[in-house]
Image (cartoon, rainbow, N blue to C red; front, side, top):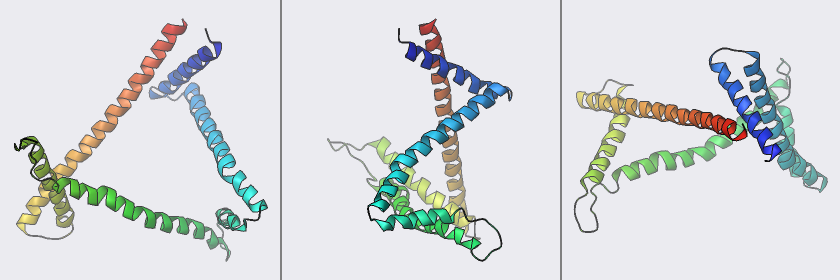
Amino acid sequence: MNIFNDIGAITASLLTIAVFSGFFKQNPVYRFAESLFIGVSAGYFAAIWYFSIIKPAYKSALGGDLLILIPLLAGLLLFIPSNDTSYSKLRFLPAAFIVIVTTAINIPVYFTAFIQEMIRNSVIPLVSFDESGTLEIDTTINSVLSILCVTSAMMFLVARHRNSNRFVNTTGEIGRFFILVAIGSTFAYTLLSRLILFMGKIEFIINAVRTRF
């Protein structure tokens, strides 16, 4: 018997039950577990940032690398009070720089991953054959449906902002159906994954009680 493992399992089980108690009613036990989780998370990430960012930057500045002071000063600008003084608007400069740089970096990445690759995988291959040359009906139908889904969804984005002809409007309504199916599937997947996590926590509590007692 390892007393440290037992104490850890019992503590984890009690905190899990404390968090689950918030489903029924707000109570001091739930608020304690919530505050403990937030405090431990904040302390953990503060320690990570200090030892991985602040401390190495401080050593680099002492070693003569003065360029490290630029992001330090930019971070200090964020703490300028939001009053009506002439220098109070300087606090927007670091945030604007972060937004611009992040946008410039992520737009090509997201375009390649979520638009270019999605269209490419929807079209290639359009007609699939196996090694013996036989037509793979299921894969071909899946490719055709993928093209129909992507095209109709794009038509829906066009038709909802302007008065188009009947073909564009009809195709847009088909795309609206596929968009709703995608949203429903995403919601169902998220709900199912949360239920799996919930069942895993219940199983953890049962196993902890059965093993320790």
